[in-house]
Length: 326
Ligand code: UDP
Ligand code: MG
Image 1 (cartoon, rainbow, N blue to C red):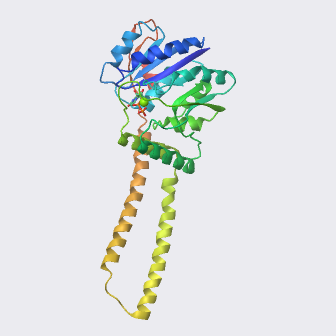
Image 2: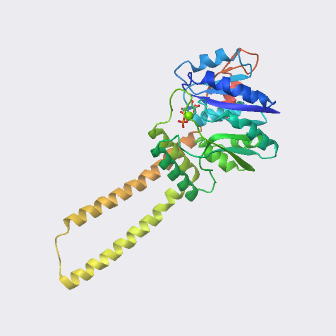
Image 3: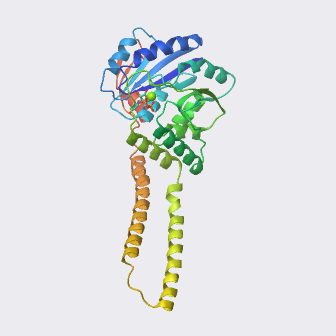
């Protein structure tokens, strides 16, 4: 039986050496055959050179070098499509996904579970803003989607080969992996952990990236934001009818009153705002429909290292281009 560790990397030159020196002995201790597949997501630093150099020391290291930065979700998909293991574990490169959990995950996998989530016991290491926004996001997703996305669970999990094949069969370009993995289903269990700080380097996700990531998740797995406008419109219409009735009564009883400039202005601005938000929501979905219909490859592979003879560089060929296009 073979274990594949899939590690998306974007400008991770500082963390790769410590990642390998920490993870390798733990994986070796499981007694399984293994491979560590790094996916370079268009790094601008020496990530590729670092991995290639270290592959002389660590013979199980493989590298999929993408042609540019495609984002973590696409990089993970690339890693999954090259993984050959019976169990696959996606892991961050910064050791925030503690490798000490791997033996426990494998034990649960051997006990028959197809997915073993690593769930965070607390979010102590996050800023308060991230804590609040993350919990609001998960609560909202729970309310508006049919898939059960486990809260406080990143991408760190063990997945059986059948689950990864299922994930790879999802055709969408919008790779909101947490959602896709949840939508795949299968018999799951969990292990708990405390998330440590980043080993070195700094986070690649700023607030704007996380916001767009959340939008990908919402639009990818729910149509509630689209359908809600029927009801918002109905409520506004109902309100305006009753207000019109009140004006008629008022005019009959007290006569015509001309002032009302402020009321009129605020009502017009309010409705204008509501309509623009509605159009904006439509735009979020339509923009993604455009991206889906183009059916562009999820990722493009620039080079592969270590997949055949060690240290041989397989340049982008028809076969890898095929796999890239899934
Ligand atoms: N990452 C990536 N492509 C990107 C951004 C991030 O492959 O465009 C990788 C990154 O190298 C790391 C993992 O995704 O291995 C998680 O990133 P990070 O630690 O910055 O995120 P955080 O833990 O702060 O959420
Ligand atoms: Mg991190």
